[in-house]
Image 1 (spheres, rainbow, N blue to C red):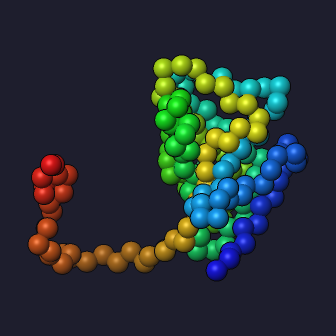
Image 2: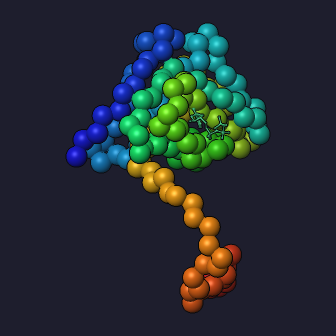
Length: 151
Ligand SMILES: O=c1ccn([C@H]2C[C@H](O)[C@@H](COP(=O)(O)OP(=O)(O)OP(=O)(O)O)O2)c(=O)[nH]1
């Protein structure tokens, strides 16, 4: 099944590629940085920054887009998406931005066109919250946070 994602490229991203799947089975499409070519973003260790993508999504109702880290950037440089997975709502019509943080020990430079994150489109279920006096019990009950052991 193929779904369409309508994407508007803003003027400052006109020369940048649309997101695309790099392999037939890829779950995510890479997002590239749309900061000006003459304004690279230098991220010092522990600094965070919102990186523009120059893209506006028109998601179908019932879907979201998740902004997730690229594992290569995280592994090689300690650079990740601070709010991962970032949530792009179906009714959001602003520019998609990527909140990067540098958890590495070295500074990291974001240049225009660099693949900085990936986006996954996923269905969402909106539920109807219904208050009850007491929720049904289960064998687990309130066990969590390692209640079954940590080994
Ligand atoms: O990584 C992200 C996360 C969010 N957004 C945009 C799309 C999303 O629909 C909107 C709001 O995001 P969220 O609901 O996470 O933000 P909030 O802090 O709850 O702010 P708001 O009060 O605007 O909902 O910001 C992005 O561009 N990138």
